[in-house]
Length: 285
Image (cartoon, rainbow, N blue to C red; front, side, top):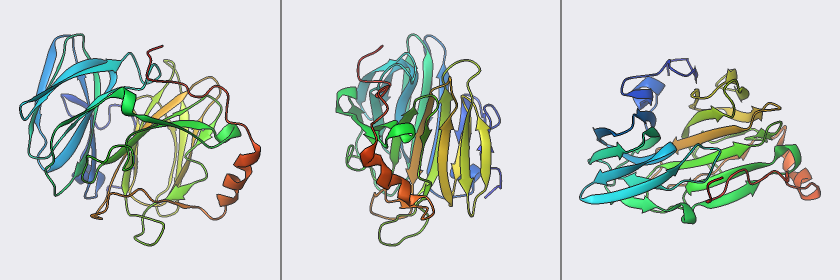
């Protein structure tokens, strides 16, 4: 591990990617993320190597060609405008992404042993979950979690939207031990914050120590330790993309709450979900 867990926007750029997190860069084995920006009419071809990969629009739409499959991805104006469709592409593949109007595209990836088939993920199939209650209310778009998208080998990914003033990834939790109720997963948080001057805060503690002000385009690496809360400051809604993968042959997302704060979950049945949620749906707003 490099010891640098907070990556401000631009500090991990590797053109043509505005963000490139490889396992070698992170100091681990499985999880990876790149963010690709294409101009109008732009195209980019890449090999997946040993990594299954998603093409997830952050803004704009695209066409994805892989192994003879050709997917038209509608995309979205921004992560705060709608739940998006996406494409899954397997390891050991050649992929071409083309965008007529231009856009930004996240490429979450996981090193895996199995070569599966390319797939289109419709926005209509994305499971939108409202999690927590009160000031811990947030929206989770389970587009590539094990129960919602069973067509991946190791990769787990979801989006979290948190209304301004709320806390998410709370209670703090971890997934760094192989034991009943917990699975080992390396995790990347990638952030977007509403507004040109938007800020938020991320905490990681225990065997990893981060207390960072984050802005749009930042990432935080979580190899182990308790993580949370992710704090959306008043005035600025918060989005983050979670990318996870680990060594277990079972693709499972099991977490353990910090026992000092686990009691907070027991208060949720007596509270209402924040009425501002969901922030987005499958319809463009």
